[in-house]
Image (cartoon, rainbow, N blue to C red; front, side, top):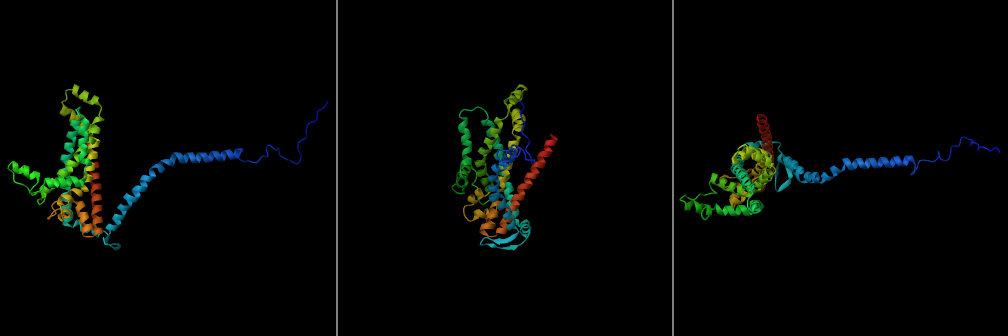
Length: 337
């Protein structure tokens, strides 16, 4: 019995399966969904890290970069504190007048000398203290916490206590000097005694903090280096000089940078040490006026915000110059070694 074959559809009509339009379940819909997933995945990999760090840059832009740029804009004008909305364009005149001002050079010299007097002994004492704490001692945790207590003390409290210690008539420092036959010193009226007294406050407050930084860096040095040096017959001083110092050189540079920034911005200690109207001016003869005090005096005592902004930018440029010199010296010494 013969079977009949169904005839092909006439009129060029396509097969129903092949005529189905691309939709959600078709190949075109799947490819579009896949492309969207790829875009989201690429954004997740490349864009999310920027989203995580965006809050920092927003806060830095609002409270760091914008005040810096606005201060530079103010430094180009004559602006008084009482009428901040009224500005008179001066260009770089505030900076040129600053370079011709004896008070600025005096404050710069005082900032430098107080910075040297406070930074060099501070870092040397911190290095020695960290070296002692690096050995096994009974109650080492107590000594480490005690070293950090001065840093946790407020500047105001520390400055007031040291001001009473260095008081001319009833201070304990003069009492101790007179007990050994040395005449008392007028610490606040003479230049070098006043700067020494202010530096003492800075040394007391920051030595323990730097010592803990050095201690953490020392504990990261492999003990094998010390054992090898001891086998070679190196004494403890030689181990300290040839193993410890090179091992914490990066931390030493870091503390030098921090101390330089702190010395340039020194304000609270000399202000409180002055006790009264001479505090802002750094003594009757400006013998211990720093750049920070001069900035405050120009802006909030003389109401000259343009000059105060110029001093602020001068401090900023001085720090940049110091860092550039430090990098150059570091590269030169590294090449020689």
